[in-house]
Image 1 (cartoon, rainbow, N blue to C red):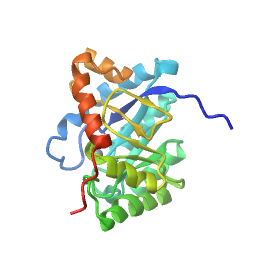
Image 2: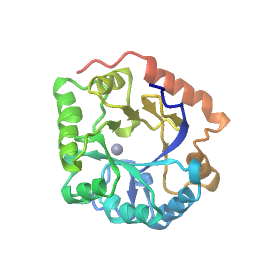
Image 3: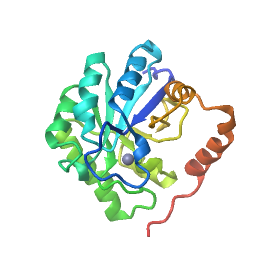
Image 4: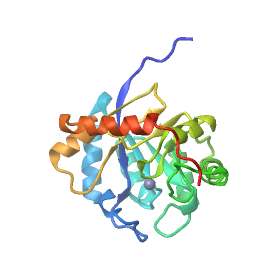
Length: 233
Ligand SMILES: [Zn+2]
């Protein structure tokens, strides 16, 4: 059977839209954007045609269902929602019914873990809770297998990649910027943040990494992909 040709695509990450309904984690404010900013970005994506980036959401905030779902529908756009099993049903986060609505509307449910913790150095119990149990409960709600994962805080190493591959995941979505290739396990994403200037937003939408940032990005990628995994504590 012929293999699908390699394609490059930009992938975006959104987090929260509008007003948070829960206490934010330290430093999280910048990942929340206004509804107007979100709608403007979706309009731009919808106008990009074949070059439109893939859309993803992390953390399972209630705004995924209250704001993103209807706005995506209006524009005929699809997204991947990386959810935390431990937050479902809590104030400010998606309810079980919300997760079902997202899946029924044709969106993909992915794994972001259980408790929003660093996946590096997970011991056997952590791996069971964060990767297996969380995946199982999300798949039950979605009514579909969960095959994509996004590491909390964009933190991963060779051990995280290996564990996800062993668990049978098809891809690990990261926060490394640039473009993703459909044939690779690691899929870098470009984060949408509050107050991005026009050139910075354009770079995110096109997966362009400015020349000045490339050496640091490359060093970071090399560390994460090649260094040995952290030992479980
Ligand atoms: Zn997260």
